[in-house]
Image (cartoon, rainbow, N blue to C red):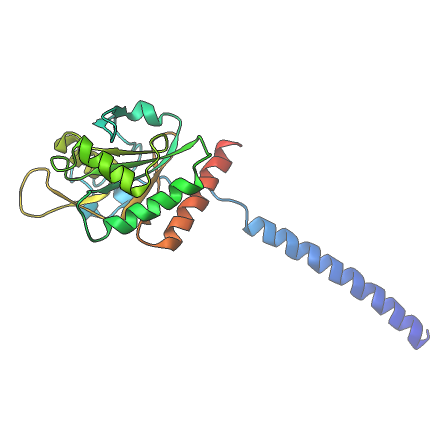
Length: 226
């Protein structure tokens, strides 16, 4: 066998081997990048300071409870308004000067991204319902660019909001002074699926977490379509 014949045979093998490697690498990449379902959060998976003591050890079947609150337009908002919807929820108050302006700005950014998606909505609960009247919420909504069909700012009975925060959304702390139903909201945004289950917690002050929410919304919709 001449040197040229050997080299030609080796060259053909090298080409074949290179193509095979590319195929294998492509398959591995696709397998590793297959979308995975989001976790379903249960009370036992969340920091105890955010969860009512009566459900802290619950390991399954957790869902957002029924509710009836009033939005910025004086309309009654219930779970029916969010039936078969994916939504992002948070807790805030209109006079907050610390993290709330950043959270609201980031929620408004999500609103822009989902504006034409009928499957996705937003829901912000006031933790100071006595201060946040309908008129106050309406004023705030106009200032912050809230679009009514996409985003409800809600007020109502403080006990109900407290219980939603602590027993449903697992999202706020007590203020520690012993006053019944007093609460301190956090920077948490919660992603809720169409079955009223919590599918993610995010820092509503961080741009990278807002990107993660938007990606996770796409993941929820992907699995809904399967």
